[in-house]
Amino acid sequence: AITAVAPVAVLSVQLIGLALAPKGSRALSSVLGVLGVTAPLHLAFVAPDYVYYLMAALLSAAGVSLFATGCKFREHRAAIQDLEEALNAPRKPFVSTYRGGMMMATILAILAVDFQNFERRLAKTE
Image (cartoon, rainbow, N blue to C red; front, side):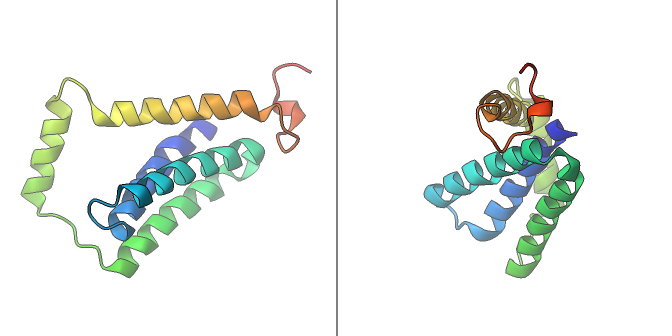
């Protein structure tokens, strides 16, 4: 269940960035991307019992930000066309995003055992 946090965090960050960050604001979207993915992954490793609450909070935050800013969605045909292009591309962007999330999860899991807020029972060895 911990590995499910990465795609949910990436989706939430993308939706929140769509609602809050103006077009071309790379600094804000970069900071939001780093904090919005690494912080939930860290929380998932530190408190694995609350993973489902964490995912619900991420999706709720994305929904509230979209609703509060009045973000308008694209036309149906344009969205379907972009989806078809992404699926037919030789390099799938959603697979790259998932791999990046799993790499972040692996890095955090390896580094987490060095700090006291990570439960020792989840470590591989003593």
